[in-house]
Length: 357
Ligand code: CUA
Image 1 (cartoon, rainbow, N blue to C red):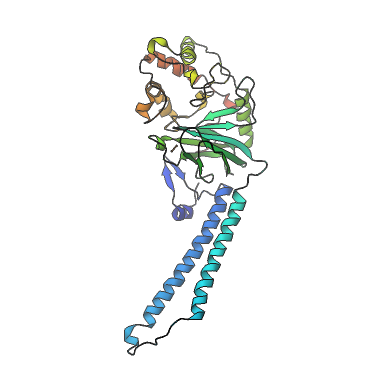
Image 2 (image 1 turned 135 degrees about the horizontal axis):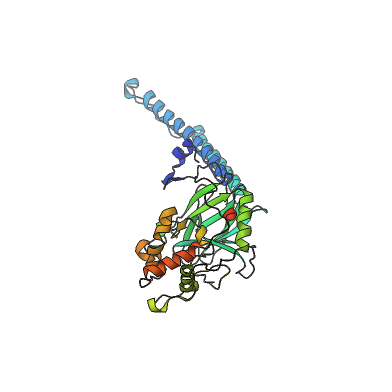
């Protein structure tokens, strides 16, 4: 999703078969920044050529073998000094105007922007869609570590943090912003191309800073609307098998004999008594493709769920979820069986519908 020239000039990072680059031309934010960069790079190249020319011209013209006599001795050159002041002032003025113009284009939040509140925490992301009331819920759609947006719309991200300073960055979709506890900053991202994009925390925030990732899933508008409607109306299905029921019971009440507290005290599942807000919302966990804030994806994520519940810090350094070492393998199987039932309807799920970019 990146032009070769963009990769060359601005540098891009290959990331698990995805490319992170602000040279991605499918975001109007990045296009604006890119063309401003091109203008500055072109000016820099012209200046480099001019200075190199002057240097080699002077060295060649005043070579010793061409001038046996002592050169003219003089002091000051008003014309040259005026040029040396005026030209840089013009160059800096042009760059200032370009930068101010670009900021004026990319910074204001358009009226029709879709608002998403983003909260960084050690070491995961909460995405909350305000103005999407849910009957019997906490009032908004929330999702952990997977940000679903409509392609072609401006998205106004309001970013904050729970504990320490993090930074939100999906390089292909727009600029980077610090996520600071107690502060709320709004900025934009956008893409005109549906796809799955990579995001990362970009401010050192602790042991699993590098494992504080997220996915941005940009869907065609109709598919996004299907997702958000289903998410608003979502109610977790009742456990249907004895294993799911056992998993449900551990989730809601914990298991005293294994010294395990209820998962529900930290996690929320829409349509159940689980309303914790300490860890990620697990309402449609079964429809997600990642685990541990993007630490694992796909089949790996499924395979890592049991070790994760048993002792998350052993597989993701610094993870704050308590260890549940005494839960039996059967307990973990039951929990996984229950969590797998937490699915959005197929037409509203967002994975596998758009290509990874
Ligand atoms: Cu959060 Cu680095």
